Length: 106
Image (tube, rainbow, N blue to C red; front, top):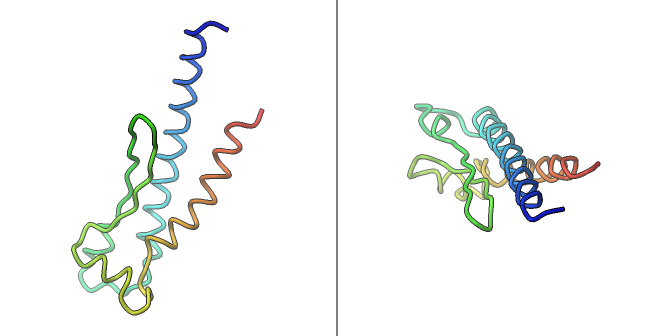
């Protein structure tokens, strides 16, 4: 196998991993918006929940976050009663691992 073939295969693998991450990030965002455990007053906190796939040379990261300043209180106040980020991350971590494992099975 030539160096060009290896580079092309690595590029395709990297692109496939990014696609899987983007799929799960979108699903996780929908899950957070549908399952956030607080009662909406204005709907702003729920609407501002979002996910993003960050890509750099060495890492692909899925970031789940609030878009409101008081999101930190929803996550950590009241013993985490209103938390949605970490529960979603735990749930989608397992789904992501399964998807990536199936991507690499022949």
